[in-house]
Amino acid sequence: MRKRFCSELIGTYILVVIGCGAVVVNDLHDGAVTHVGIALTFGLVVMAVIYAVGDISGAHINPAVTVGFWAARRFDGRDIAPYIAAQLIGATLAAVSLRAIFGAHPTLGATLPTGSAGQSFALEVLLTAILMFVILCVSSGAKEKGIMAGAAIGAVIAFEALFGGPVSGASMNPARSLGPAFVSGKLGEHQWVYVVAPVVGSLLSVVVFRCVSDAREVAGGSEVSAG
Image 1 (spheres, rainbow, N blue to C red):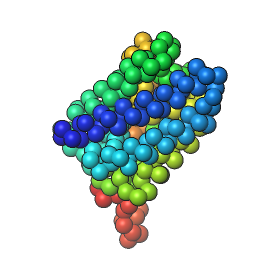
Image 2 (cartoon, helix red, strand yellow):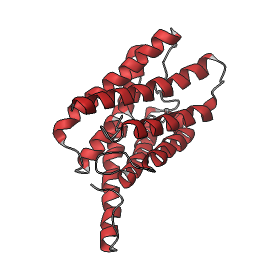
Image 3 (cartoon, rainbow, N blue to C red):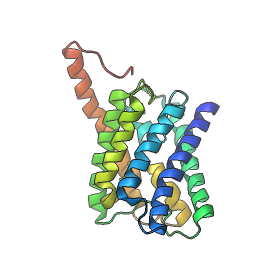
């Protein structure tokens, strides 16, 4: 568990310091990174982290993914709290690093709705459901690992950030949102959306995945996932 805890902490730290760092740099340097660049940065960093620590902790780096694996009966409930704690600590340390490097940026890349909270909630549920469905299809048990798992999951992160980023920030990850929000003092600004919606979306995806896996069994096929 010590190695898995450290892997989740480090993986989430890398995700937030690079992904949210891209948001901060884009804001401070007149859009130099661009929206497309930010989306690709998040997708690429998730892919890299999966390849780096996927065989150690599974590279969840997201509380909603951890809960989703548990709901799919691939993950021991006793390990949920340590995993989420590691993810939240990693995200917070990353935000502290961004504060130290870039100073008084107002949000440090925290996710905030540009429209109504309800619109962002619905979008975050949808985006996370799609993400978790893909993860369940390409992962092995409770681990995001394998030759194509990182590429597939990174691609989903990227195209969902391209689509949903301007509306909700396309968080899909409570830790990624809470770390920067806590350090920048934005916890009270609709952060409940980015905690509740990803968990709801993740749980919904488990129901959908079971429909697909049942269909595979009836057809005599084999599931991609080992869980």
